[in-house]
Length: 186
Ligand SMILES: Cc1cc2nc3c(=O)[nH]c(=O)nc-3n(C[C@H](O)[C@H](O)[C@H](O)COP(=O)(O)O)c2cc1C
Image (cartoon, rainbow, N blue to C red; front, top):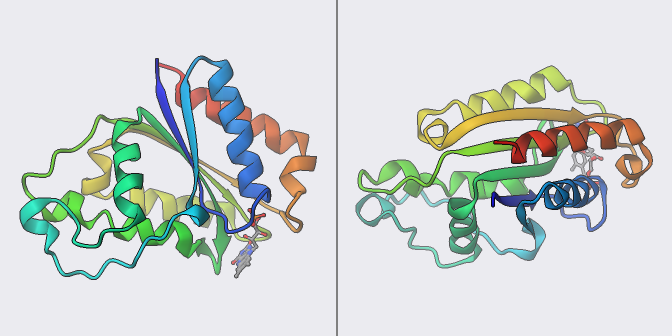
């Protein structure tokens, strides 16, 4: 059975990103996957201090929510991330844990987890989807990340002017279903 981790990065409960996360979870469960959803607003995750203490051990010296998140990421065969765009970038809520992946490249003996399918879903009002996808490409093609990635896809949901935009937009929901199914498929 495929293990799917769904990460919602929005600070807003039941907003657009949670809607996409819930729908993804439903689709993946129906497809037979073992699904868990985490909400980053429930985590306390500090900023990477660039101390490189992790270079020797592969373990970050900061003991906070990141260890739990990293353990869940390791176990997953697929990860779906839903995140709002703030200032033409994925929100800090997802960039902060991304920076904490320092231990995964700084430590030579770090054990990389199984290769995963990654689905990124960004919600925004008017940012350019091509540019937002380019940001995803820049991150996911970094060698230290790419070695854990089997394949990835990015979808950008624009015109999310209200927190219930995605809940009301059936065309968006169809795109979410397709992407979630792609993530669980062999
Ligand atoms: C601080 C802040 C900055 C934002 N910056 C952008 C932006 O640069 N481009 C954009 O299209 N939308 C921007 N937005 C709008 C959100 O990305 C959008 O409303 C998103 O769908 C909210 O997701 P949620 O309902 O899950 O909270 C911004 C919103 C906030 C709060």
